[in-house]
Image (tube, rainbow over all chains, first blue to last red; front, side):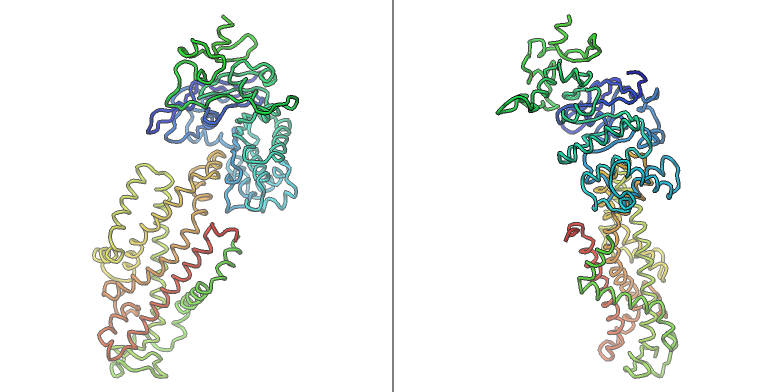
Length: 325
Length: 278
């Protein structure tokens, strides 16, 4: 993978709330190349959504990006002026949310909402923008695009709304698409339709995708690389196939084990014991040590480094670090 | 969408009646003065306090002026005062409310404490205070009423904006690269309109009451202009001997205010999003 488009270095996003300082994202590094699909995986509260929101600088009070760089094509997004970042949002980097039901404005037709983005960034006239909206609706596979542009959001189903959201996100041919749990709110058949659509569009338009999800099935279908997050830190990174075949971090292993397998008969799914630790009472040493099956003495004392292995995979675990040494 | 709301409004008889009465009064205010044959200011001191007759339908007042003509002309003054002042108050209130709710922080604290101070006064008292500073007359009455209706609207709009700005479609437009201005114009204001419409309608009634009250106290529209409150005030001294002179303008005020209330209630129910699917 060459030509890096987005490089995130030591990103730290903290939330300063009454109970104390919450390190929602702590020292996260990753790269995204052109045409790559990167999946960010983790449990609820592991910091994956905050990571994706940080990329577009959408963190609001009491949250704050306190450190790191986000280099987009050689420029630091965190140092840009408000006007510069606005010209990137929706134009070069766009985003899909997990709630298609409420992500559209109920008082306007979907056509107007798609053309709004086009008019802002491409300075087209209203008629041309509407024409383009029709093409986009056709692109995301909604029948009768001519009729659909004049529909209001409440006239569409959840899957169709998510398609419209994708159409809005793709309206300006973005270089990067951030999809924050794009299929969570949809039922399974619609999920697969949306995933197929994203896959198709990725091939057609060459967009790089950051896929934020907790659904490993989605990951397997769509992504090239995976970054696993736990308690605000990246714990493992590598190509999807290798991670599925041979997870290095016990947390990744636990996540993979908790998926029902089609060829094994099981009465109960394997689970990862315990829950994500409260951000105010993070364990000393490795954050996963309280739930890990392989826990060693050193895990409880010192936090392992995020090391790069010879294969290019990255992992943050004493088990692997110890073996290497 | 708008069709649905209109149909829902039509289902409620009281609002339809209120709406019709308001339309009639508005028409009277616009074309009424051409329909009357007499001059509302023409005095006839030989014919004071006359009872209703074919020439003077509602009798005459203390200076022999025709009450019917004066009520019809008064509709124009009353309607103008209430519409202009409420419109000005609503626009000012919306601007303040949107700024306060959307940007929050220090500006919000300052604006909302200011409205708290204004809301602490009874509305009429505030209007009297404004008149005391600016002096009487039609324009100053409008300013006074606009001034006291502004904080109410600002409060309501701020609340609505606070809830709308957290919704996903506003977040989505931030992600899409919209500027604050275009988000406010395209997303915040259209979605807070239903609340504003309802409160504006109800405010129109309040504005008429207030302007009449001010004129009744001699602070608002000044004689000889035919304003309903002023007419009421002049007729007050002869209430026992010649009640018709006070009853007619009083009835006009009641009818219009009641109609605005009925229409406003109907609008509130018709625009209630909880009833969306019924």
